[in-house]
Length: 91
Image (cartoon, rainbow, N blue to C red; front, side):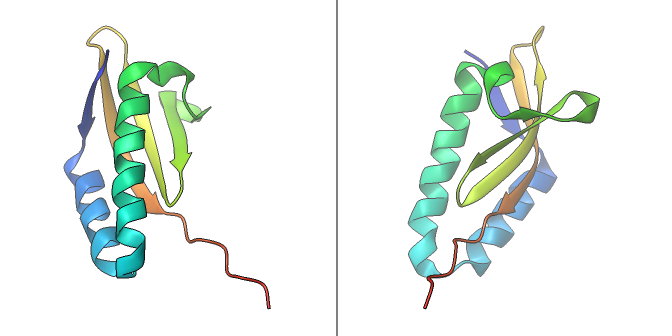
């Protein structure tokens, strides 16, 4: 198991997203956060997609995160978080 740590910037962004999303989306946001933490704690180097600089990106709508894995310390650092807007219903 890996320890998952969120940077202050990522936590601040998550709080900002929480305050801005419609109240009906907050449950989905909370669920996505828990799913992300669980997946990153389990096998982070095989989650998401790789990016330059040793970063990885993982999407669990309505939330996306960028993270780095420190294999020696058994730690995952969540660097960024962003909101994935749900698709608009078609008319």
